[in-house]
Length: 182
Image: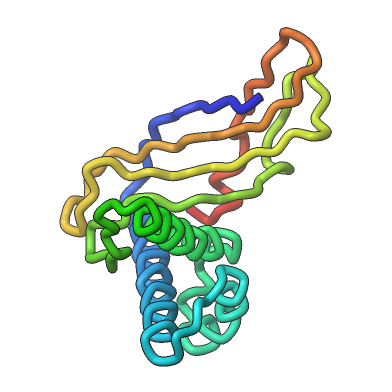
């Protein structure tokens, strides 16, 4: 069973700058991945898979050391979004709809990033076994623009919960944000 929780974050100014920095780096990776896939297709007629783009991340991190500030899985999730955009594009082409080629994201147009795997960061309800629990965090910034320091930060916690009984597992954040260096 998939269960989602939404929390409102009230970060300090320094935490806001860290979140905005990570958001900007994810936006750059999104645009770089889109440009790479577009250029590969236009120049060689070659389609690039998301796994091939994942293999580019270590090279990009050497070229841009600031990318090391963002978790690798978060950057891979950003590249998966490009892959999903292309899949939706080709699905629309095949269906005969107006396709709408995937677009580059300008400043303020990329408003969320994910931490796909954080299993060890949560305490579980004692009635629920912790094994088999898969958790993903999505941080979404509502009303984000690069100039607005006071945006609303929401965090969506998505859990895949094994059905054992009627008890529901409610994760608690505990020390998670301190370990993220926010």
